[in-house]
Amino acid sequence: MAEQSNGNGKGKTEGGADAQQAAVQAQVVGQYIKDLSFENPNVGKLLGPKGDGPNIKVEVNVEAMKVGDEVYESAINFKATAANKEMTFYDLEIVYAGLFRLQNIPEQALEPFLLINCPTLIFPFLRRIIADVTREGGFPPLLMDPIDFAQLFMRRQKEMAAAAMGGKA
Image 1: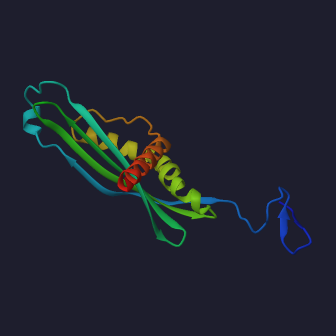
Image 2 (image 1 turned 120 degrees about the horizontal axis):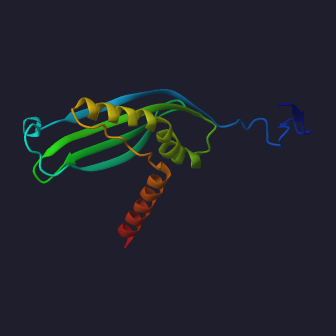
Image 3 (image 1 turned 60 degrees about the vertical axis):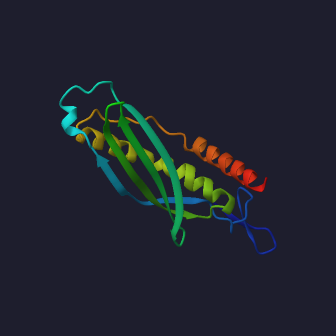
């Protein structure tokens, strides 16, 4: 991209933006299992009659924190419990995280980027681990549908706003 001087010593790009304003950059530095627990508490009972099929309860939370200069961790906390009235089939808890180097992101866009875009990038890897762990635990693989992290973020924002309003009343 060619740079032109505008007479005041500041350069302009062909698009008209200041050359000093660099483009937003995001880089995946790494991704990893931060914590993993799979419990199969009633394996002996599973050999006999199981009664009703399990109901699967799923919880997903996302959190983020700064870990270094321009490096942030975004983590998906995932819990799944398969149970029926008679027993718990399995409990799965995993925290899957990614490290991201983020440059030139405006402050107001940082939190949404860390809680929406970053988890969206690492979720397919978490999805595969969830399927593998449940299959290796002796159950059909738990195949997760894609998660709308933007909707989760908006719901969380509304809950926090409602809690703030409730605390002021």
